[in-house]
Structure formats: structure tokens, C-alpha cells
Image 1 (cartoon, rainbow, N blue to C red):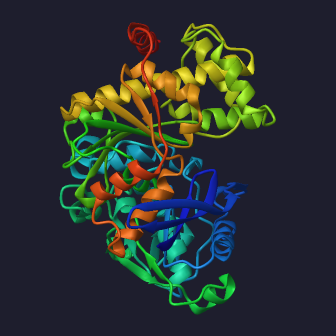
Image 2 (image 1 turned 90 degrees about the vertical axis):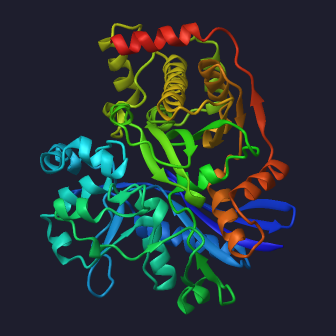
Image 3 (image 1 turned 45 degrees about the vertical axis):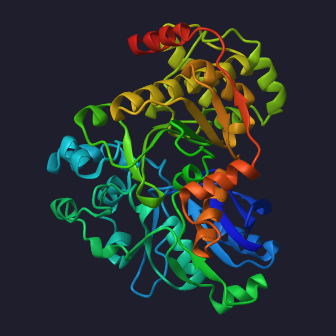
Length: 479
């Protein structure tokens, strides 16, 4: 048995999980869980990255002996370092307003069609490319000698070694998904110096050893290597989809965001794909994560915060009794991106589209879950059409697997069986890459077979006629 510490940082919480892997066993235990609370400063919305790093150290201290450490996190955000390697301020949160209107400035130099053909990345206002464009005139940016994406920044603090892991780099909108390398021509046209980035690493590459000071603080006996994993948490989560050999599947990684799509061998760079706002992000073993970003359980999380954190189980039971598809909203609408007033904003969206306005928490919750299931349906159907890749089953992994109502509604909407995979999918995918570096897992397919044998799952069969979901989609499109 080998033990691997998987540091998995989500947009609302972080955790350090320890995976113990043997020839035919995989066990995951939680060493430490901690909040990830953005902070609104006079300058804008920022990540409290020092608190995150402290949480990582606490987790390594609590986790006991490990044979390796890997870090994954959300994408697009970064820290800037000066010539001495010191952090230049807290990293800016992707929900900060600084990128409003920036995309249009970029498109004036490189039209959106050309940008997509070069990078295959969907439009999102917070893409790293737009963040860099917004930051270029700042004093911090002028002082910066290095840019490290969030998991690479924490790896640097643990090891003193700098690198840029590829799956996360593919979300910057500066990577060519065909060559799996930087798009030098694009960066030159936009005036972005790629020397700002550390050299690329691939999942499984060594990322250094824990520094002596880290060993002393965590009580770990060295040497302890840090391994580059699929450091974009979605890359790690998709690696933990327990699909069977040869199975035609779609996946939905659920949490603060829902990422719904297909695992492909090559990117889809057509204009039709761009118009449908699908992204081509890089995955493990040469794969492409062809998916659409959907606002996800962020909508419900913000409502729960506004309602004073009521009991979720009871709320879902009441929501299940609310008539289906009475009101739906566009779960991908950027109007829901910023925090605050989420119940009121959902009600306003329903009112503006001429639908019944949900009033009670149960009605608003049902509106959210119906809307997410509808968005899942549309994303899977569009991915199948655009990639010409039929599917027979939808795998749901991540935090949303705990929400049985959402899983059943997704099966109903898609008209396909939904099989839930691991709740801690990103941590398990992280562990599998580390296990591969010790030859305990040969490749992605063998890792998935191990997951199928060792991790529980639930199957949801579709109920009812999908026609009502088509009608709801048409109603929403017409609004």
C-alpha cells in the first residue's frame, strides 16, 4: 500500500484527502477540510491564498505519512511573483469585476472566431487571457517576473520549484489544444510575454520535494516528492469518472460549477462549436475535455447563504413536491456570476421572462434544480451533436452526487441513465495520477477499472417523457 495526499481546492472549500492504493484496493479518507472564503477588499474581490496554504499545511500535518503530494484547484486564477519570488498581493478572484468589457478589447486585435480556432476555449469573461489584459496596466503586473496558476503557486511554496501544469494551463486561452503547447503566435499578437510563465509540466511529472521547513512544520519524514497531477480540478474529476472499457459516456462534474461534456481524442474547433460556447480543455493521457461550463450549485449555495443556511435535506424534500418545470432560468447566464441577492435575482429572471415567480425557498430551489437539469440536458445533447459522438449513459461525479433530486432530474431531462461516481472525484483523480507515478496504475483505463471495483455508485433511470423538457427549453429560448 502507498499513501498519497491529494490537496483538492474548490471554489468554496478545500480539503486534504489521503488515498491509500494497493494492487486491487483504493481507500480515501479525509485528513482536513477548510473553508475557502473570498475577501472583498477596497481593491476588489480577492482569494485568501495564505489561509488556503495554512489549510494545506494543517492537512499534511493531520494526514500522517505519505509517499507523495499532489495539488489540484479551480482554474484561470493566478499569483504574480517579483524577482525575489515574493507574492505581489493576494490573487484576484475570477468573479471580480475587472474583466467587464475586456473581451471586446481582445477581440479588436484577435477576432473571437480566430481566438477560438487557435485555442478552442469557450468565452468566459474571467478567462486568464482577459484577466491578463485587464491587469497589464497595473503596478503589480509591471513588477511581476513570474505568473503561477493557483495550484502551481502552492506547489512552489511547498517545494521552491516553479512550473505550469498543462491541464490548468489549457484554461488560460493561451494553449493550442492540437499541439498541447503554448500558442506563441497568438500571445505575440496580443502582446503577452510567455516568459512570464514557468515551464510546462504534464500530469505525472515530478514537481520537487517538500522543503525542509515544510517537513518540520508538518512533521513529515522526508524526502516527500510532490507530483504534478491534473491540477485543474475538473481534469482530475474527469479522470475519476468510473466509465467501463468501451462505454459511450458523457460526464457532468458537479459542484459550484457544472461541467458537462465528453472525453475526446481531439479538439472540436468548428465555428458551430464556438457559437455553442463549448470549450476544449486538456485532460490526461492525450484526451480533450470537450464541455460547457454551467453555473452549477453556486445558485443554490448563494440562496442557502441568503436564507441563513437552512437544513438542506428538508429543503430538498419540500422542493421535490413543487410542480416540475413551473419556472426555469438560464443556468449559464453571467447575470448569476457575482455573489449576493441570488433568490431575488432568480425571481427577477423568472418575472422578466413572463414565468410564474417562485416565492418560497422550496419553489426557488426547485426552479434552480430544474434549470440545472435542463442545462445538463442541453449541454450533453449539444456535445453529442457537435462532436458526432453518441452516448448511452451520463456519469455524474462531484458534490452534486449527494443531491439525489438533481441526479434524478438530470436522468429525466437527458432521457438517459445517470450513474453517480465518486463525490470526491477530483481527489481520487489526483490520487490515481500519483499512483501511476509509482507504477501502481498503468493508465487512465486501469485507474477507472480500479474505481469501478472499489467505489460505490447509484444508478438513476429516466422517468416520464422528455417532451416536457424540450418544451421548457423552447420556452426559455423564446424568453
